[in-house]
Image 1 (cartoon, rainbow over the protein chains, first blue to last red):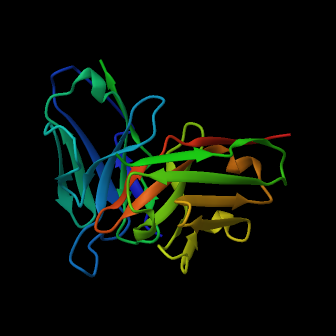
Image 2 (cartoon, chains in turn orange, yellow):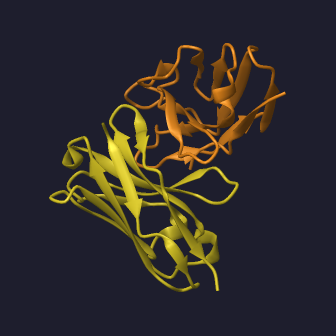
Length: 113
Length: 118
């Protein structure tokens, strides 16, 4: 099974400043079809997870362009260019390369300083 | 608009059973793999099971194999999770989720809470 490890576990950020979250997988997420199925999810307090980014860097429908994803192989990063109050919550990376089996990171809590 | 609405959660004693349901709308249900994902209190999501469009393939996380059964009724646009021999560690919010080819899980329901306690 692929293990996903996120850092940091908590990220205090000032409003309007950038934020960055890292995710590392225990093995390469490059699929035999050449794609890398690494997604980022946001979970606001009291809500279900919501897809933000898929295949490393593709923003899902309705996601603001201040969110961006990058990386390759086993190392990936989610960046928020300018944090807004509504961005507070938990962020998870998720791999779908091993579909039909999925695995998730343990989460990073984004909070405002 | 795509909607997934779970039901059937509740409080059950260890060793008991529950059947979760998920009503899907806003998309052609029979064209998609579907998953159940759970989230224990204070923890990250954990994928539990998924099922192919026609029900011919089913996959489970090791910790629920032999105890949980995923099924679907495409005529009713519904997904199910039969949970038997429940344990305290099965306590979680259970989410119904859509598997999108080329993406992974793209849509989540609001979840239903399962509490296993005596």
